[in-house]
Image (cartoon, rainbow, N blue to C red; front, top):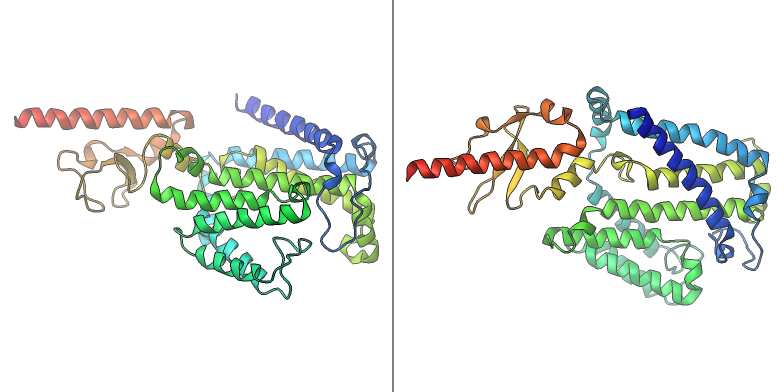
Amino acid sequence: MENNIYYRKIGKLIFTILASIFIFGNSETSSFAHIKWFQSFNIQEQPVLPGQFMATPTWLLGLALSLPALWACVAIDAAGKNARLGRVLSLIRRPFGFKADDLVRLTIAFWLSWLWMLPEPIWLTPELKAPDASIQWVQLGLAALCLSRRGAGLTGLGLIGLWVGAARQYGTYHLLDYPLFLGFAICLIAISLDRLRVRVLASVTAHRIGLLGATMSWTLMWASMEKWAFADWSLTLLCARPYLTMGLTPEVFLSLSGWFEFGAAAMLLLGGARCQPAIGLCTADDLRLRRAGIRPGGSGWTFSNHRGSGHHHLERQWPGRRRGQFHPEIRPETCSASAHQLHRRPVRHWHRLYRRLEFRLWRRYHAGSRQRI
């Protein structure tokens, strides 16, 4: 049964790869592909048709090498559900124990600070020259706001403003090369809104890392298509600097590097919840807890570990409750289940398990109230 799931994922990957190549290659706006930052280009140049570059031996070699790599990524993603391998992966990730939200905020703050230190102002990327030097001070202010979770939303709105300003100067098709900045903006706004816990926006805030991965996938796919459809733009640079090709011919290096980008985009778009762009910083269990209405520090029930004993249980929240304090009518030892038993259950039964435990606790609490009466 599990092998069938692997085959379905691989089939979906192959179909999406081939369909995306034809869609991007035959698009009327494909001549506005990702512009080289350090190389001159001709925007009126006609792209190479997919049927032409897909028939080259180097492109087929990249396809043959990429599919096993994607298969291995899917297998590692699925093997992460194994208890032993999961412990090994957690030990590897432990030294890099950043939260995904904090990592995104610090990265954007560093990048905006770098834009402020440049000798001439740019909107977002080196080829997007800005006409006014005061934009750099706006970028520095956005970097300062991004250091706090409350100000991250204002930084997200500022990124959208910078993207719109660049689109007005260079055209919307040119800025379609960079949807990643819109993904960062949405992610920062969702980080700030998550503190407010607005029910209407709960789905957006819960999927903010997935939305960021989707925009990053679009950016990488667009850049890889440029290497195949507009190879002349990059071949000039590679021929002038042959050390960049690592001993390969410029044509072979360019075709294989396009497959590297396209493979990374495919995994970001189609990978499991454990293969999201946060690289293990945000797990699928966090999303299932939110869907079940169970949040750390929120109202209702919370799922936690009692004094490091290895037993997970549901805590009942009430006004004036201190951290780690339980309701007097609900003792954790009477309603706990071992972590091993919970994690051995299929993932699709998490929601049902929480509801069953919640009902048992509710019935036990009201039974005790009737006895006191």
